[in-house]
Image (cartoon, rainbow, N blue to C red; front, side, top):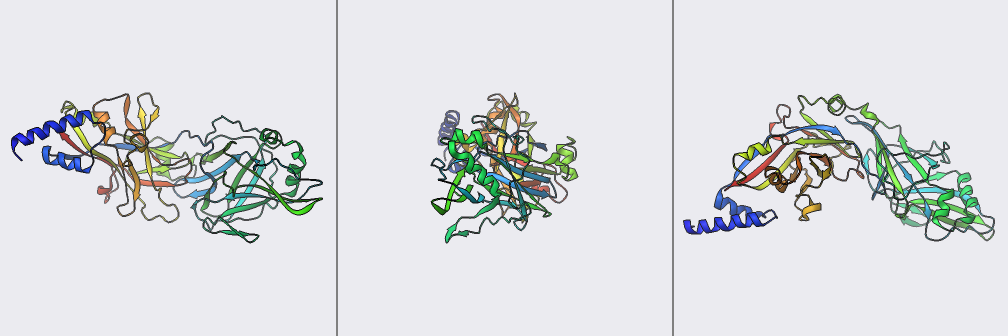
Length: 439
């Protein structure tokens, strides 16, 4: 390429860089390498684990139930508060209806932990009304009765998320069937005469509080979709006109359901995790921790990122920047690794925002964050975010939070190497890889 043509291409490239908000694709990056030469570098990074403060769990796409005992993170439980409304038609049980049985059904949509763990459920009728339009959080609770509605509280249940259930000759998707007391079922029938609307139902039957425990050393948390057609309260009854009748009350998208998560203050967590999140001791950190269910996140600091490029007088274009996270336990079988990680940007006032590279903002699908089992790494693109920081564009802090994606609906955790890993793991350090061009 002649000097004249090279200069023309250089001028055209700089104009495009100034005017274009989108990051260049791979072809564009190759062109920049040819014309300008790209310097590849890493930048200083410090990080430590912190508690995840607050998370809304109101009407999430799925809910978690169960009890888990993790040798690193300690004990965690997940319970559900939910309204149950009519299943499409006004309840009408006919003349002299008598309950035969009542079953709480919960669709199983996934699990975390050991599915060989036997679970025992507890179900209580709510005494507090769940308010539509109210935001409920991971720590929220609502009042309930003291009477466990299980027909046999000693019954053990096993979560079989991949095993279909055959009922009356019909093959149904995996779900749990929990038998409640017939007295509770008869109570619902007897109160139903005036249940012409959902509001009338909720005036008498405010909903259920559901929790599950396990005597298994590990335990299990499973996902359930409360608005699935396989989730509900099914009343089997007979009346003067016939036998084998049934009616279902179901949670609804128009109703209220929320999760409560309890980590018990991490009393049973390992010492290194407690040192970071409880004692706020961030010295000599070699491992970092993430936990879903509003548990633990990592605060990632880039304290020198602006100074690093200050001498260039902002004459720099970030071609690509990636946060690289290396898994400390790549071969976990029970406490499996999260499928994807995410980033919460932080403004100077402490409020959170989506960084510009996030798919929620860019819409281009290149944000990354998914786990590569071959390399044992997660890579998250933060190119536009780094460019924003070094140019001081906006009111943004030079730190962000690393979290498990879908933290409200997934039960998973991750242990990963810090920026100063243990001896022998130097190539696995937490880092930001930056490829940039000066002009």
